[in-house]
Length: 510
Ligand code: GLU
Image (cartoon, rainbow, N blue to C red; front, side):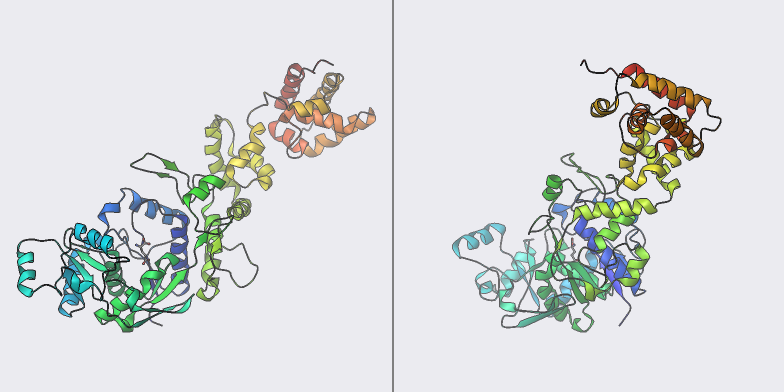
């Protein structure tokens, strides 16, 4: 096989969808596995649909996920420019090549004329059966064509599809797909009005000139593939045509049909890698990054949507994915977007993240919750995180589990009061305070036997006393080991919280 060169070729028409991210990832994994190159090409020939900020968004999303680009607009490379709007000369020249070879023709039909045809002819298609009844360089006399061009009439260049051909597309995932050329229309390849090619022409010319070996893209592009095969032939490039790989669709988590943004809104998960601020409407769409996902978790989750390693392995780093990835283990069937699994991956990766990294991320969460991180040492924050992270899927969950390490409770769970607080509790808490005050060593290890000894020696109820203690310190009867908590918050804070609770907790009138 020649050198592997793949491309991710998004159109900057909005935020990159999570399905597009998966396409980019599979291209990257395949390239790296084969010592090949990953090209990022910006397909911006549709000026009508161009959205400012979309290109930066694509770059930022890929960088966040660790999907490296070897050649692209920012990276440069020997086959540039990598942005299609900067390649007009190249496309113009290639349109001329097809024109000289008689593979295309100029069509002068106005939008109104085309509309009229569509209305009067049922299932109208611009093809071999109709083209001679239209206004184009095949049907009009040569001098008329010249007159139109001289008068500055706008035209499009259409591909002259020959009927009666079986067009074969060999897809690495789908196998051989054969269609009859009769069903294809004479696609527009170029528009004089904006001097730009359409997607089909630009895509094929660039894949050829950039020496792309494999076209790995979403299944929604499969219907374009027969046309692309014919274009390679028309240019005389059939021998160097890249291999086609059409990836299965991403499906709704709860049923059939393509995953859409609405599914995300309905079920509460992002469909974009990063938060997106729509420049026109001002709408904000949530992103995986801002929702607290770790990039490695997103990568791992996406890698398994449409591919499997051939065994049960689920947790794989980028390097492991690169070494295990294979096109033969990509599925034909659509992949359900199991977003709950995405949370599970985040949980797994959160546990593997070094605590010092979590501390840095957690400080943002603290600030958001009105606590200034400078009031606590990194060591203190790290210890609190380590005690609770086993129950967290996201860094923000850590706050829910650990906030009492940073702010004393101001409210106490009514349910737990009913269950664990009685008239006698303030007296017991007073005794407990004395025991805590008398300890020479306040560490978990030293404090625990003394406090538990005091409870048993006095015949007190272990569960009630310990839970009242917890209620006073935490605000509810939940959390990590009690004496680990008190060791970290320290003696003064523990005793002051007990006093505060005794003061604040009023028993309901009997
Ligand atoms: N510009 C197309 C897109 O937005 C590229 C499709 C392809 O990879 O050929 O996805």
